[in-house]
Amino acid sequence: MHQPLEAPGQKPLGHGKCSTVGHDAGKTSGCGAGGGNGPVICSATGGNPYAGLVSHLRAAWLSGKTRPMEYRVAQLEALGRFLDEKKQEILEATALDLGKPSFEAYFTEILLCKNELNDTLNNLSHWMKDEHVCKNLATQLDSAFIRKDPYGVVLIIAPWNYPIHLFLVPLIGAIAAGNCVIIKPSEIAKNTEKLVAETLTCYLDSDCFAVVTAGVPETTKLLENKFDYIFFTGSPSVGRIVMTAAAKHLTPVTLELGGKNPCYVSDNCDVHNVARRVAWGRFFNAGQTCVAPDYVLCSLEMQEKLMPALREAITEFYGSNPKESPDFGRIIGDKQFRRIRALLCSGRVAIGGQTDEKERYIAPTVLADVQPSDPAMQEEIFGPILPIVVVANMDEAIDFINARPRPLVLYAFSCDSKVVNQVLERTSSGGFCGNDTLMHMMLTSLPFGGIGNSGLGMYHGKFTFNTFTHHRGCLHRSMGLEAINAPRYPPYSQQKLGVLTTATEIKRRGMCTLL
Image 1 (spheres, rainbow, N blue to C red):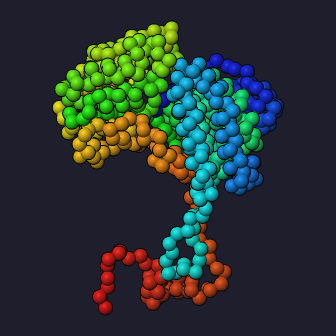
Image 2: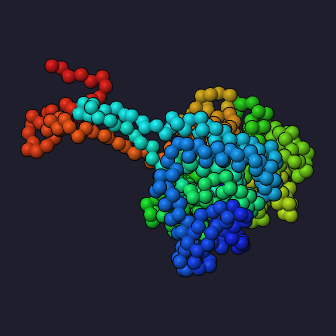
């Protein structure tokens, strides 16, 4: 879904009076405080530098502090104040890190987060309630219900491409579910990481929530600790490392990964509408979006129709020189820039192709006549390049998709709803969107997550609350009425088995017994 974590240079401990644990945490012996309002972290020399922090949060969770609804609501409302009061700083930090246009930054990093937050606040009291379930004859006088329990101390590891959204949305659900949380923002989006480390803990209860700034070696140490749940967003390669570390403690995980999202365009469609919607989805955030359409599958005839329509859409969105457009972002770093630029040798450059390494600029680019063996088809592009692969028909497109790892999302365009439904029914992917791109992400009512190589688990809206909630099956019986239990006790008999069967059996609906 996102590029792997990169090891940065060392930073001083903390960034401000309210920050918590920095890259140098635990390097001195004895005990240190992670900032003025942060928890005290104690580590023996040579021990794990984060053990004290995890223990501190676990003690807070065991105290029951995070369980009351009033506490959860107060912390969620504090996140709302963070978004409101730090709006300008968020826009500036994401602009410095990614050249992210303020429109895109506000929409994804602030508005969508506030939507998630308000949806959670609007529904939290309902989500938290015990869920009473059906009972059999033997338990009719008892109480059977599902209790929504928090997991405990959870770890959220976020990526750099949407550096606020992709830690804040999981955090909303983790808080709503009653957990204590350690947040590890991406060290690659340096300005946003600094902002989060300096300010977020000023809004949240430092006994229960902490921000850790860490590179690869430190994150490896962090993962050695026992967490009760880990939520990771990033690449499949790093996801495997996280899952391996979690397995040592049998810790459950959600992995939001990614891959190559196919976009099938049938011959029967409105070419100009397709071009605008595909170009917007591909080049939003300079292509650094896990759910962007990664490549187009279409007939040769449709490729020839799409080219002028895509050129027209790109010019309409970004002008004749996208490099000068305030609405087109930049690549996050030099390493990522060079990796994406190397993919331009695939097929032929039909639109764009210009690059500027100093600015980390790669123009909105469309590659035509791309072969499945070309470099652009061997990895997730994660940049402003759109390859077009020619297929004969829908059946060949479906075979092409099914021959590859299951993607995070699949797109299909056609004026014929039967075609869209055929693609939906005959493929498998984390999500699906017909006749548009990215828009399924706007709905808190839809689960978002991958399948297979593209991820494990889901979130957004109530699904985030459920992800961070242990659904605890509970049966509360009376201490009296012992005669009801007699048929299950030894010595056994056929008569007792008959009574027990009558009291507990589940029958198929519509079946009847002839007397």
